[in-house]
Length: 295
Image (tube, rainbow, N blue to C red; front, side, top):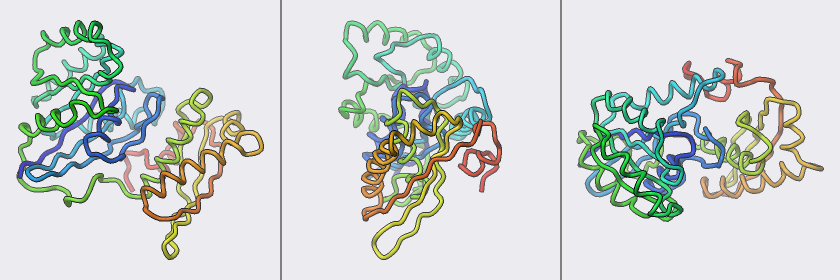
């Protein structure tokens, strides 16, 4: 049995979380069109007959503008420590620019193998993609390059097989049925946040957080009460919608996904609260779990 940790890094919206979900064949990291949807390390675990790979998903690279941004950058730095391989994800549709090349140079200095996954090949024209891939030929330190489409699951199996050769461990870190290191409570809060981001894609920026006030199982059903936190007064009516239509729709979609996660019927109650500039408020960040001062 070969085992090990693989850090997944890349620019915002490169497709890191979609690729992670495809590799572990379950949704363990939420996805939305908004940059920096992922805010902290999320481990996805894939175990087969001869290996266990622990993938560490990370936030997209950013220029920090607040305390939450500082936390996210710290999460990236922590993720690449003591790993067997760094998987750099590059959006093949957008092309390879100086940001990606600088990122590759930065991680080359870590002294661990670097594998590049060029994603979104299903929407990339070959005539446009090939010159972009050629830019990687002269980059020192890249062990391998794979072209994948996580949405279509093209090339994902080949990528996982290729990554096995970099695993150095021999003992399993997780039970063979585990797919993530995160709790059900964390997953529920992330599902709700995902549905808010998707529903309010063009109207609400990144400043949305979710607090689980109550999560109790009664017989075979779950009773969940959660608060959606926004950072401006003008955002609250957007999330609520006219006569509460938006928050009702968010709740319906969130409940459906949570029921799939928990395998049980769910009663979900959502509230919306304003906490001005919460991304710079240490106490709110701690309450949401975005703090280097762990609970």
